[in-house]
Length: 238
Image 1: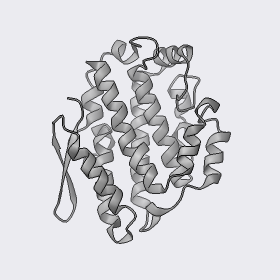
Image 2: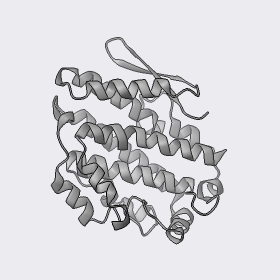
Image 3: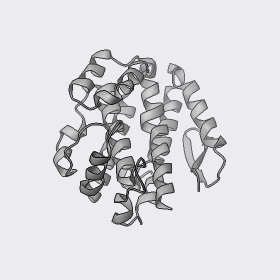
């Protein structure tokens, strides 16, 4: 399976149904519709329901009882720890890196940038992950990649990911009509830089985030970015 696709049926609320096809058209069309409705205050509830459904499928079913199927669980539940840590060849990231990277991006983008809240990483998770890194992993050299891949706590990273996902859903639920159109506060971009969440070699990421609205943060770090890295993890698994 190259990608997991989703069909949304509207009948008072958005309901997630899974179809396992190789065509990306359904996912892309859903993202396109979501992008169109998010800026419209009158469509706030519909956009929020769609966003929660897309986001939920990218996290473990442990995150929310409403999740009927999880791409994360499909990729990771039966993965041997050795496969999780394996670096296939120089220049290719491990599954461990993909899961760490996409989770840190979500934590940073949702908490610091979208909500102005403390990252979960700074609420006790830094020690539990068992690695000396806090940045997104962009620009990581081979030595750091080997260390992350060998030392990252296998169980803790999934628990951290679940906690990050739950917090994202709290933030989504707290948004008010019109909030999706809000620009990212550049003081929060500076905060991310000061906290060294992004290394200097990846400064382009700060520029990218600084040009987004809140809807852009949810459309990439909380949905599309997650599926990109789960797809890569799935390929490495095979």
